Length: 238
Length: 285
Image (cartoon, rainbow over all chains, first blue to last red; front, side, top):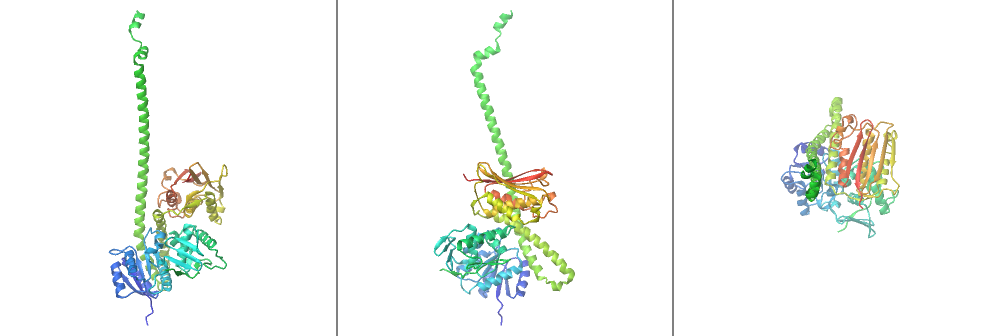
């Protein structure tokens, strides 16, 4: 019985796919490779993968176009985007993209495997992922991602621009260990020497506004020495 | 004779006074207008010259950024392939010698990857919209100093934070607090790198009516005249910086952040006595 998750790796650089495909196979996946967007769509039609690792910048049809076409026809196969340089964090977070996660090149292949496993664990087949939901509920908290606003018991709460982005990222990645490096990369767009402090300041702001006790958290749990984890149950509001 | 001659030879002064005085006045006026006009055109010329120099500088800087952006772009794919290839080499199959060699290569790949990540910071910053709030300069500087609180090198230097209280504490500026923190952090980090134990570093701020001026001054080795304009350039590493860790992107990032805030950066230095880096941030009236 073959229970290996099926991956489709899409990148026009054979130097990358030739190295990465064997690595992903050894990590326990069944891997197929496509060299551009059109080839990727053909592969998906012939045998739908469990997850697609999709480079953004490719000849013929780029990754964004592939993503758009799949989502337009209601195909919610989980996708991890390999994003391009200079991409602002906010754009990468935008729900219009419809990607489940993204990772900047160059990356540590082990980090990619960790992300793939997380996205697969989180994904429910055929359902849109939390990362594309417009409105999310978690207990008393509602996050409206189109308006970029948050409400607690139906009353709007006021957060700094970075805190609301951070909250948005956390509620769309519940139950995951979110290292400070990853949060910085996702929300601030880069890591920097004072990053740890910056994250902690914003988490403290979130906790204060949400009335969350760090010792008995309902929303944000501290993972000592590593980062944070969003522990509230999150649901999409339709 | 003398008198007669005197009578008939017109006295130039009298002559002028008598007949040409209005003309002279007019001439004087014309001359002054000409002088004023030429002064005006000269200064206009100077201004346009300055503007030209400024725009040449801006173009050069934009060219440099574009080039670095492309370089970053061209580096990321090969680096991704190299990292994946290195991960495929399992340490057990390699034997001790190759294992050490591969470990050394991995370290170097990480080093280039870090450089690429640093270049990306500049690109991200240029493409991003500032998320601004009111930032209190005094609190900002206190926070920067707190970041360094536990570093051994700061404890070996005489660090002072000087903030005005008269006639009032510094007013708030509009800015992105995280980015401003990063900018001042980089200046202080730089000051620490180019000073020795026992040196003095002063972080000070003042207002001059339309802007907040933040200075990071040190009694370090100073910067030679010929390098003053170069330290803001991406990847520039001073001769004195050899052996000092750094990417050559710390100060360009400072300048990019401050310019993004509508401010400017400056520096003055006395070789072997010390350097003052200054940041000018506009105050919204």
